Length: 197
Image 1 (tube, rainbow, N blue to C red):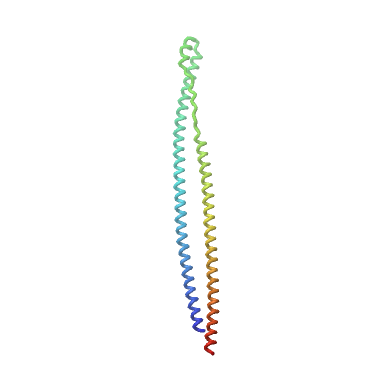
Image 2: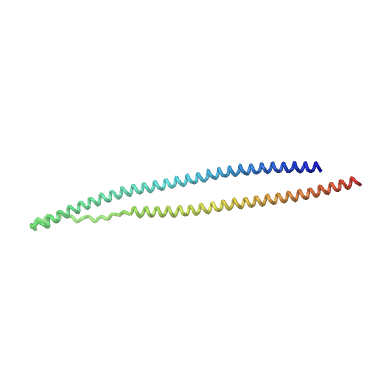
């Protein structure tokens, strides 16, 4: 009986050590996994920041180009305004003259103002770019959120399966030990019975 208690104690101590080792290994695995997850998410953040920076730089370059275009359009418009003002002054002078001959001689030299159309749609384009970016970022966030939910669900499922597997192993071990104990007791009884006879 003392030997059986001693063996049971020894077995339980070994099981406790194995359990502590398993818990420690599990903790170390979780720490490694957390480190890897931190690295992966840091890389994702860097990627997002890099792409955001590229996009902002592109928009700023487009803005500078639009400003250059606007300056050119304004310069052209100012030239046209000056031309129209000069023509207006000449017309006023001609209208004040009473010499019809002079009026007819100078009238062909006054050319009609140029009717240049200036297309300037920068503001609308920037708004379209911002809306497109907003929509795409929303889609990426939705996709990322869906992937994260799947990962979390998978981790929970794996934990449940692992817990169920351990529970089954424990039950199997307990049943095995119970049956082994019963067989052991039967053998003792048989050994004891045969020794008595």
